[in-house]
Amino acid sequence: MVPSSDGSTAPSNFNPLSIHLLSSNLRAQLDGCERVPLDTVKKFPGAGLYALYYKGDLPLYGQLKGKDAPIYVGKAEAGNSSYGEQPDETEPKLFNRITDHRKSISEATNLEASHFDVRYLVLDDIWIVLGERALLRAHSPVLWNTLMTGFGSNPSGGARKNGRSIWDSIHPGRKRAQSLLCNRKYSLSEMEKLISDGINISLQQPGPQRDKELTDLKNRPAKIIWEEHESKDKRCRVFRKDIFLEENNRLGVEIDPDDWVLNDGAAGGYETTETATLDTSANITESE
Image (cartoon, rainbow, N blue to C red; front, side, top):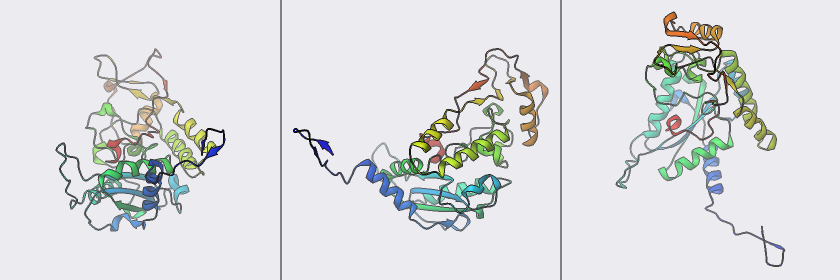
């Protein structure tokens, strides 16, 4: 409704192509697709959107079992051309992306592809980004997109200074992460608390209370465990020694005493709110 010249209200124009309605339609279309066991998906052509759902028995995800809440949302685009050429829509881009995820899940020591379902929707590229954002907003926080970053990202290289992602810390086993040091900011118990709180929020009905709890979670400070030394000293600087040693031992990472130095308590940012725990911007690297 919009105010008229005499102070009364008049109906506003309905826009069937508004971003809100287009987003809602895309989300509803995917949510209405059949859930298919991840390990049974057959090859098909095209690009589009997909969502993964957990149905296994891992206690950490117990609240998600039997719920229609995705644990991960992603996309695969047909391709972009600076010359405006039509992408090859016969390529199985979406299938290949889903297959990559199935391989990552199968590498983890505590996950199995058979414990997941997937929904997917073949789309033209013009709708894909809009649809992904709609799904992320509707189901926020989508666990593996936001709180447990690292699942859908491309390998970051073997440098230990990168630190292990939360996903690879909770689900060890991927070869690309085996040589990486523990996560920079979270111990196992801290990650589990973060994940539990995030799941609780994601299962709430949309509204002010959910928005407030989501904001509080996003701004929750994290205590740094270790960081790369800023000087020419190649040793990492450790703030929480016991956690640093315990986490790397849990993950089977061998630590040479000459590889790290205990921080002396001087400036260095022991507590930070700069965290990768809640990336609501739908980072492209995570989901393309």
